[in-house]
Image 1 (spheres, rainbow over the protein chains, first blue to last red):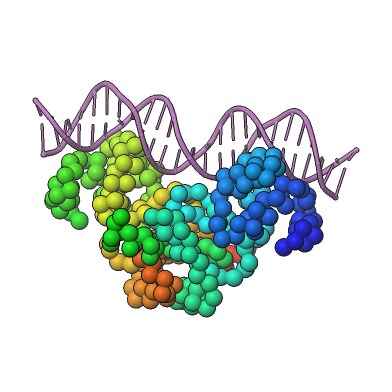
Image 2: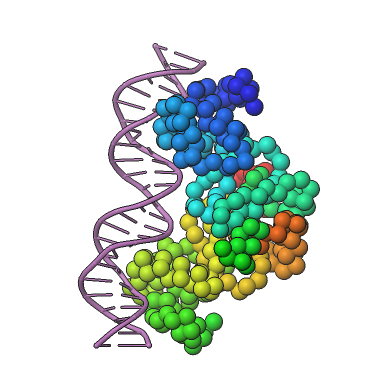
Length: 146
Length: 146
DNA sequence: TTATTTGCAAAGGCTTTGCAGCAAA
DNA sequence: TTTGCTGCAAAGCCTTTGCAAATAA
């Protein structure tokens, strides 16, 4: 989503367009694969010498999530991490050892969730499917410690 | 697991058997389907007029989880909830509206996770598969509000 | 008796909130 | 001008930790 679209988006929802909101959205989009936490977003924006308060980061993330632009993952460190919500059903395999996140997308993700859902009439929300475990690399290290 | 087995279990691992540890295990086992949090366990034990400290509850839960007797679920309220670890792979469908937890067990759970896992060589840990969404009852309420 | 556990109180980490000053519309 | 946003500081929660007293072995 570019700046003009974002402006329009906020307008439609009766939110003000601000430099801080744009900066938060941009840093999450730019570091998409990193699934940044609030603190990491805050720090990234300090480095870009944009003085933004941590409270504003939290408020902005919550708003963007509620409005559907971002989705949140709870990692094992108990902090919330964010990614752009592209609307596609997908899951995350999260390594409990090293914290690596492997994204599972496409038909495999969809079919797997449908199977788990079964006949429960449960409406799974986007971006909320996380499996915790040990990734391949960490398994190898367990088997053959350095 | 009965008291004698628990005593033996602790003995083998060089832990002391204490009334507090037994009480915590028993309350989690008794309220199995409720997936209690540390605070709920603490309160349940106060009601049973057993003076246990909240710190002891936390320490005990962590120990029992590490030793494989309990497993932990992170719910949307960001607090940890506990259940007896029976070793079976299973998942939870957790309603974001009402907090209800639907357990998914058996071959459906296993096949679904295998599918999601795919060829990633990712070793899923027990009791760690949670899908967030809206349950049937809350969906109905959304469609036809009271 | 010795090693372990308990539990109070304090601290830690993430997140939210109150509010005065500031910016958007 | 009016409404909404920012950001500091303080507070709120859940959880962990330090340590002296109490308990298990």
